Image (tube, rainbow, N blue to C red; front, side):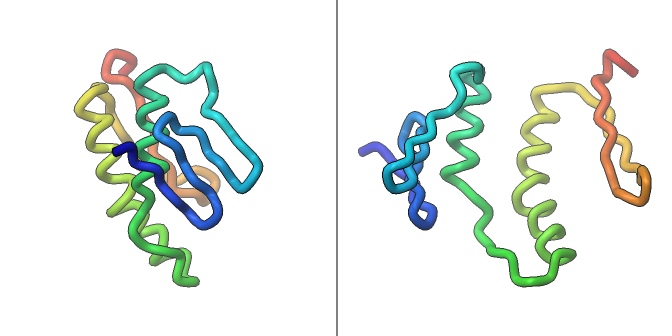
Length: 101
């Protein structure tokens, strides 16, 4: 059985096509197979929590439960150095390929 994800009135088909009532939005034909599958997986497995009104709490949950596992997977595939820094008052992560260091 093919899994179809449902988010509110949007449905995400097995090929990543999003259907919102009568609106159909396919994934870009320019995506690699790997990027296409990642987009489908991410759409089908959104964070298990909702925004509760506190941006700091939401950000911390997103970092821990959503982004950290994806970053770990990416770092297994790609050798990079990550440096956290503040730029113009905004916390950022600088990601540089090990070969480019």
